Length: 223
Image 1 (cartoon, rainbow, N blue to C red):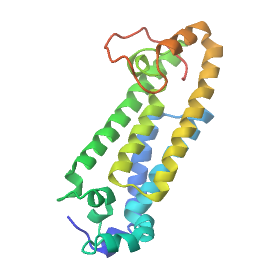
Image 2 (image 1 turned 45 degrees about the vertical axis):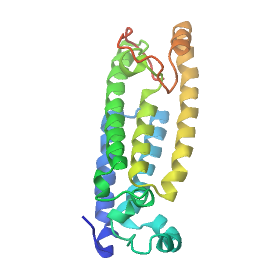
Image 3 (image 1 turned 180 degrees about the vertical axis):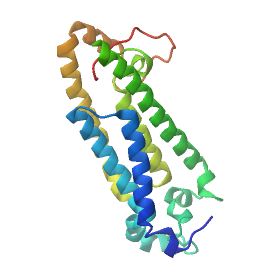
């Protein structure tokens, strides 16, 4: 359904509501405790706010591209909400953008990201309580499933609503998460020594290589 330009943007109440919903979801699944956790959560929250600010508040990206867009697509009103899904239009998709392949893939990535975030936290919480190393569940496949989860959610949102701000933020945040992951690994290695060294040797940092369902024994500190 198309919205008029007056109703598609300037809806700051929707910016606040949608931002709070997704930030609350992330908070409830991630439950930040350390300074590193809060830094991760804060950067993700900033991404979410920037996204919804353009989705419902002020369409900065569309304004900046308006000259080129009107020449390339003279019959399209890019200040309606549906046309704000730029990839849908630029790639020549037809019909409702909320049901195209990009939007469906986006929803899958977002749901998968939040599911991974929740699953990882449960394993990690039990491991921290037992003061052991978490190597079961998502930690059986990658050493930093929670960072992978945040990246999946952000990439999912980029597929349905890319903006200049979020496109700039995304690689910066990925780089930040990689740095945080390496820093945390040094701390965990000091705590668990050879146990963590062997785990790190067998388990990739971000990209799983072993998709078997053979679980390892549980335990862990944050890695």
